[in-house]
Image 1 (cartoon, rainbow, N blue to C red):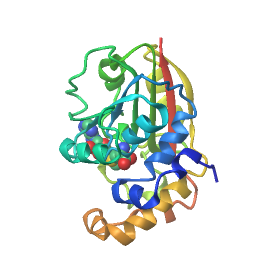
Image 2 (cartoon, rainbow, N blue to C red):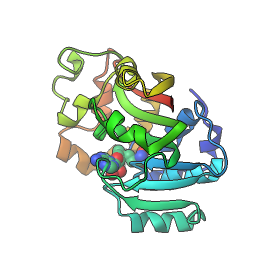
Image 3 (cartoon, rainbow, N blue to C red):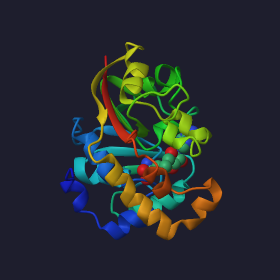
Length: 245
Ligand SMILES: C[S@@+](CC[C@H](N)C(=O)[O-])C[C@H]1O[C@@H](n2cnc3c(N)ncnc32)[C@H](O)[C@@H]1O
């Protein structure tokens, strides 16, 4: 299993109180191994959820973070940033991905952990919106749930009864790479399936079964059933980074 020494400094209990999917700090640490973040940079944390990743970015890299989310109240996030002692460096905002309030070229980097697949999996989101947020030479990094390869129906046969609408934005690393690369706006610096992705996902899935039983009632299955069905190992978490030309 990959090790994530920076993540290990944070209490599991605190992570579990605030995570909204597979351990976002491990996913972010994995991503940051392929990025160059340095003190004073301005970083957009898109879909920051409860702000764990925003706190991590401020503490580990001494960057200024715009913690942007839709579902989570920014006032609630501000309290977490105060408790973590980073409210001078992390600014909570609520904005939908297609109506962002930022100036073009404002950020040194924009990242999204387990979020970009909700709004960025079409042909135009990157060239029309996301790419413009970052200055020339600036960096992008995303981690998304995905597939080991593309399937004609959009999903592996093992998952016929599991695939609901949101999941049609699950794609392979090559698919994501092509989505950004063909715009000729960026150089892709890494794009790969995270080693031990399913172990990371299972840790969340076990916690969610214990603590969020209602999700199964809403969706019809839970993440353990979803992962257990993956007998052909086609489900993954992938990371992609890029630099703006
Ligand atoms: C699965 S949660 C992940 C949250 C956090 N990054 C984490 O890993 O704990 C996905 C996040 O994406 C955000 N999101 C989804 N659709 C969005 C949109 N259209 N615009 C902005 N944020 C969005 C949600 O608000 C949500 O907090």
